[in-house]
Picture 1 (tube, protein in one colour):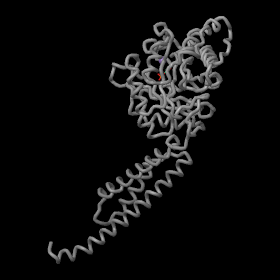
Picture 2 (cartoon, helix red, strand yellow):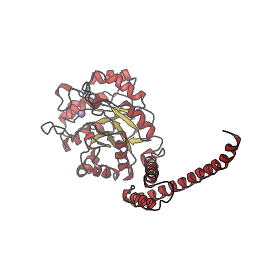
Picture 3 (cartoon, rainbow, N blue to C red):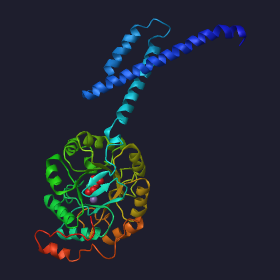
Length: 388
Ligand code: PEP
Ligand code: MN
């Protein structure tokens, strides 16, 4: 370009630069107003996005068009601005979730009885799929309680079975079996609660309440769990995204209960080699996105026993705060999920393989307790030999 043209273009370009900066300042001012309006709407519980209002603004602007930009260009420009405004609102809403706050929980994480989940130690959630009998609960709990590591005893009493003809759980009787076994061996307990109506009953028997995969979207149950003072184990639905799991946790937290542990238990994919597909990346992502502890349910994710050790290692490597494993004294006779439950020896081998608190050779074994349990209508409390 010759010097003459350069001279005439430079001031025009400088004006364009100036206008660009003015537009930028005005756009940022507009964005701040958008967020202010979004906050007012949030507080009042109003829907954030208002397409009707956008149409009105667009028609008003187009009707004022008198320059080189015609209606088509103006619609394109302003629609882009509206879309970008929606994106910043969504980003703010996501970043503003209570479950994403780093200070949501105390440093020790979620306390289940005297066990801290998310406090640094890998916590085992172990026990049978379902509580079936006093003998079954005693045999499995006696074995599990040999382990020195942090442990929460699990057993289902209310079972959300896919097939209505399958064993549905012993209900209240199952709750009592779990509670008594947990008390005898001084272990905290977790069991599933199916609906808000049975919440108080289940909460009276267990230290932690589990929301099963089939119930993750049950918002009335989630809200009810927000109102009780017990920790919640929230399982990911098998068709749920990570975002949906976090939003389900947000329901519990905003209703007043921050004591939530998230559980990755496999999602449904086209793969048939495992019962579900264990989503290890979800564990790493959840650990990044939220301060809530995350555990991995190996049994329901895999539905098989032979690859439980490498998958358990992978879960821990990805940052899991704990593992759930179904253990049954006689899996072949189990009333539910027999094919995936570990027998006692296999559980011991898994613990050794994971390098988790191996069984001491001497104490904790409560031989004789089975007989005592079976003879007495209400089992005696057995004091453990070490302090948990
Ligand atoms: C369970 O843990 O007993 C259970 C039914 O698991 P999920 O809800 O993950 O299927
Ligand atoms: Mn099960």
